[in-house]
Length: 573
Image (cartoon, rainbow, N blue to C red):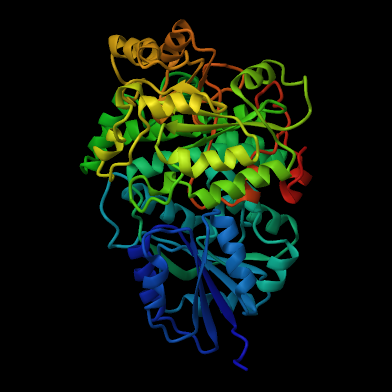
């Protein structure tokens, strides 16, 4: 029987193979006078992380676990459940451990601490970008705070990027709340655990000499996406801990004049990554420009993304009894770095539909959907509309047999300029071509309880094209249906989820009854920005059903009131 490890180092990772390998190699230099183990949890990565990590030779036992993509909280919980150590050290996959990292954590834990955080400066090998000076300033400022021995630690001082905790204390708290990662949110599960840790009376201390250098490889575009995810996460977090609302609001400048302006901007126009001006700014940042204009513009862009994320999550909270809408793409096994994650296998799709059926969901056709969406209080039974973008040929053999088995209607959104062709918009990004249904195949679907909706003529970003092309993509696509001998479409789905106030107005003028967005920029109160939940490869059926749980409405300030019991136990409020 091997001796019980003193430390179990738990590393969650997602699609960062090279960074993970560097982190593992650095662990080989650790000073560890007692047994240590490493548990790597690969959270749905498709980049060969599992195989590569298992090839790394370390001077202590190492296990590499794999799970379908479920978020950082679930990955950390999985690693903690497999760990055998007295202490858990959670380490992000971009942390280069100083050789004395465990020694310094052990010193504080042996002195009576229940949890310990250390210093996380920027790694000198981090790619120099417009972001890296800010990361270093943040690390230096935080170090100055945690070195003040007469000052108690606050939630803002604590991060799970480098956090040790007694295994018993972690278990007593129930670990991380994986529900706060549902739908792609980012950061709430981290803050929630640390806040509960402080409130539990646990002794949490800082060890400034416990150092792990962060290899910061986040790009400006990824940063903006993360802040949008963080905005959504904070709505969930403050629904669980309302007392944090004011502090988070102030921390993001919500009471300042610039903050009010940015929140107003977040309510309008295209998403933070979709407008032409945003792309120009991000291109400058990607090219290495670090001038004042680029830095200022990027800060404003990330703040708009944050507030827009908050609005999106608040909009989702207004779902209440409205029908949910699922957005699928190809239903086939696609091994492609561009489109693979958007393709759900037939087996996954069948399991998801079966889970919805078992949970009591009613499958709606477009007419039933429009009725329930307009009168959400008319029927208490949960309901869902199944939609499929682009009109892939695989729908016939991958999805249709499952739909027939459950007598489930569906909507296939057609790109009228590519009927009988391939997904040219993805091919232009380097994807392998996937065949689309031709007119005859679409007409056959229309006779088999499958409705057809419009997905534009060319799959363009509608918020970015000119007025004439917008009319062609919306009204012109509807005319194409008649030319192809297809039924008149009543529903429209914005390609890429890209829309604006002008686009929504044109969708209404074109005669569509409903137009669908995605989580970002959606509003269930607006029939021309109705949200859909995008389903990607590896989505666990039970988790998908829980994602569709109907939260309570928001109050007059727009803050979601989400019951703690619903978050923790997975019950509908």
